[in-house]
Image (cartoon, rainbow over all chains, first blue to last red; front, side, top):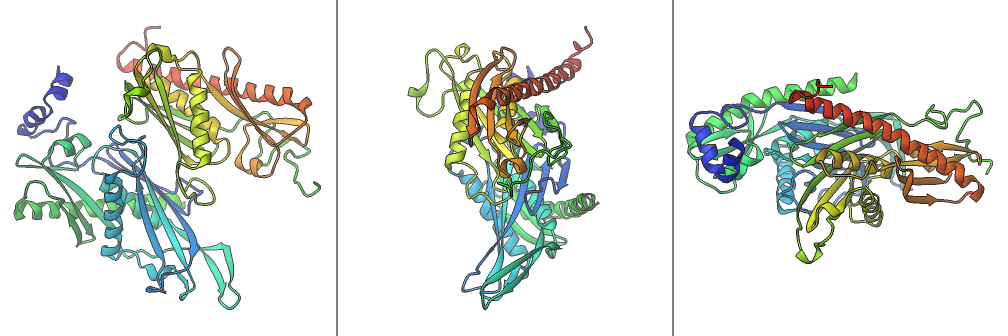
Length: 273
Length: 251
């Protein structure tokens, strides 16, 4: 009976659950799903990570290429995130050009990296005005079940932390590049921004919503924190929320940020050994 | 020619330490995700492939595509841009990916009992996460497992394997990327190993026609071996699911 009720009257189904302070997947309203991080699973890339938030799985591979910098920023390299939502991950997505959602997530991710200043693009410079590194961070969602941003940010930061760039000897006079594969250095990362997604269902706030919950809720928003600093709050419309609720969410994200940072560090150590 | 390194050393070992007739380690898992109707993950050596199956469902897009006597099988091959040594420009849509999608479709249609689902569509999505030679065989094997996981009736397993000819004489099985690059012809075979039928045969580069029977035989043997490995995984998976509903212990 349960399954039929869920399909025919999803909103009523959820409301009944939530009025009893429990969600259909057995979580309480203020509980997160387990997070899993694995770093360095793909050795064809220069840095890679797999992040799992509940059933949402994102894999990120970073490839480094040499290129020339932009004229207006001659001493900065590039970090280009690209999120892909293939039809494999959910029946929601159709084959074809990148969906609107994929583009939104890509842009959001680029903004987070830029605004949080967690990654200094100047370290990618090899020779002023001539040669810089370009890091292509490709994220593929292989299973989609809500809170996509959370998984994307964890995967991206995990992969970025494992990137090793070879030393390059560059002679601008004769345009000669010599890549020293033996000597590789990790890139510098100032901090790890962590994203936390919330959903609003009636008057209740659901932490770390699943896809079904995101679809039924009246608004979904995410909070990005780096250590104790707020990097971004993204709330694209929906029902308004009170300031008090928002502050509460930020406070919760703060605690979660620390645990996830630790998780990434542990995964990184495991990869190194 | 003298510059070309030997693919098999004089003690009979290949570059990665395998013997000529040895497959790379295969690890596979059914039902890795909950969202698709069927999903599977396979690792053949370092080649890692994910497959997901949706359907049979109503035909999407133009209804005119629907067929009154069979299901449409829609395959899409995609390769992560970071899966290869050089970064790929596009994960799909280039000629090689399109060709792969078509080949995959051809192999799968031979095994799926499409006539059971008129007016419907079955989507098979394959994603290569790590490419290290033998991409096509890994995709076919992953897709087969995903179809089984989705519960779509198959005539039998469809398996694929590659074979090559080393030192102009010895047939070798399951070619790695390193061996592909070093040269030597690659014969890709997709087969129905139980009825010993060949579904798809593709060869790159040339060798003498006299060698074909033995290379083909090696590849077909590979398909049978792979089928046996997949079979174990499938029966273990069924047992696992079965035991949760308490009928696994009935035998």
